[in-house]
Amino acid sequence: MDLSPNEQEEYHTAKKRVMLLKSFYIHAFVYFMVNIFLFIVDMLDDSSNFWFFWPLLGWGIGLAAHGLTVFFSGGLFSKDWEDRKIREYMEKDNRKR
Image (cartoon, rainbow, N blue to C red; front, side, top):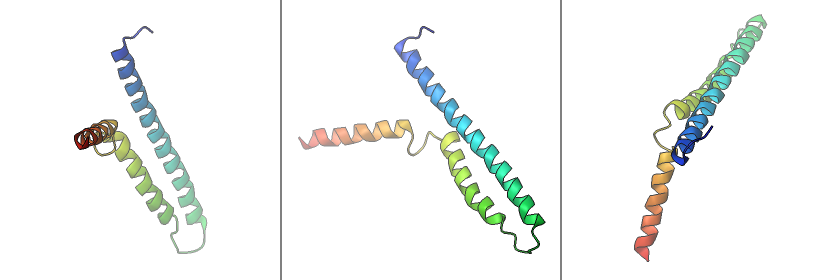
């Protein structure tokens, strides 16, 4: 595939987004499979303590955070944000000289 330097950069950016999306989908699939298993084990247990809820909640918070970084990556801590902060610090250092 012959791409110009600009197209290569766009390709790598798109590929990175696809990999992030794929990792989120895998994470979500594993989350649901494991939590279905934990729910079944908890229901087969004779205790009235519904412990499956705690890993569901804790891991769910982590999954939500993962989803936010994948689907709303234009905000804080994105590559664009990093570039802006680098330029900001470089300008600040140049003004001090």
